[in-house]
Length: 168
Image (cartoon, rainbow, N blue to C red; front, side, top):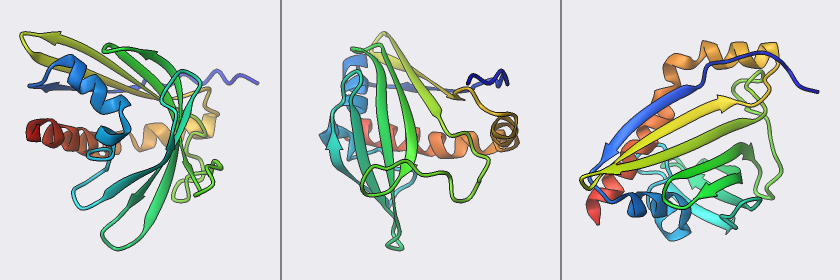
C-alpha cells in the first residue's frame, strides 16, 4: 500500500576541508564510521556486522556515557562511489530486528537518508537529505512536528564527522 502524504525532506548542508574521496570513505568504511557515527561526544560506536554494498545491511551499536545503548539497522539502497549514498535506517534490537521509535509511536516506520557529495578546490560539500518513505498521515505529522529538532541529531553527527576529518 502506498501512502500519498507528501512531506518535504529535511536538508542539511556542510562543507569539509577534506577531499571528496575521504569524506565518502568516512561514510562507507566501518573502521572510519566507528570513529564518528555518533550523535555526540562521549558516545561509542561498534559495528556488529556490515555489508556496505547495494542491498547490504549493517548493524551498529551506540553506547552512551550513562551505559545505555541502542542499535541501528541500516539497509543500503544506492552507492555511487565518492558522489552519492542512499540508505534506510531503523532502530533495532541486538539481533537486527526492526523496532518502532520508543519515544514517538507515530514516527515514520521507514526513513531514507541520501548523502550527496561534490568537491571544489579541495573542499567537499555534503548535502544530507532525510525523509520518510510513504508515511501515513500520522507519521507525516510526527515528522513535521519534530522538524525544528531534525538538525540537532544529524547536525551533531555531522559535527562529529568534521572532528574526525580534522583529526586526519
